[in-house]
Amino acid sequence: MRKRIIFLLTFLLATIVSLFFLNTKETSADVSSSSQQAIAAQIIAREKASAEAWQRKDKAFFNDLFTDDSSYFGFMSPYLQIDPKQNFLPKMDKYFEMFKMDDFEIINPRVQVYGDVAILTYNSSVSGNFAGQPMNYTGKMTVVYVKQGNTWRVAHGHESINPSLK
Image (cartoon, rainbow, N blue to C red; front, side, top):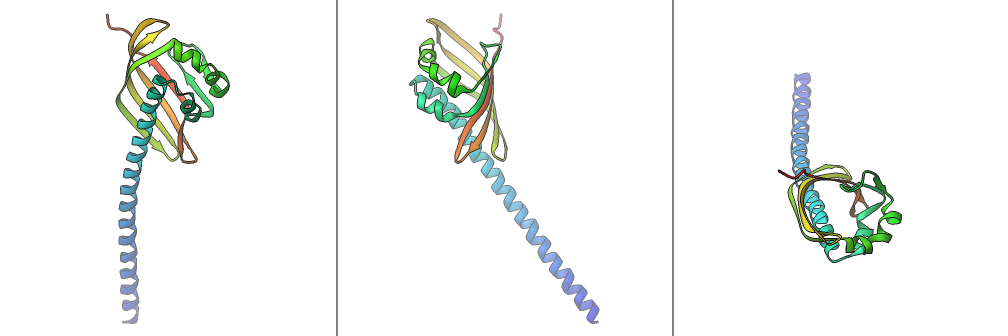
């Protein structure tokens, strides 16, 4: 009889513990999902803010946007661009004058979150002018963000232009 009582108490305790962990697992999955949605909203907002910063010629924003070892494949350059704080930011005034963005749209954004890394992919629609010539195009973007401290920064970007329809 005593063995049965010990067995029943052990079974009951194991059941309670199992239910507790199942309930905790569901709760942490819900938190994780809502946390990922919040991160996705932050990443997309940061990307939109970069277009607005370009329009207002805000070098300070870009200084904060990039990691120190950020890299970028631009659609107009066959080379990997590296070290933006040495190679890009000092020339920003020239770039602002060369490419004036009138409109920028993020279409179908998707954010995948892996801890302190987030990958943003989207289609873009851009209009403006380059060296005084009108420029309108659609393209594809991939941007890898990493969390440094409390700030999401760009570690790598890759932009390509869609071929023009004929």
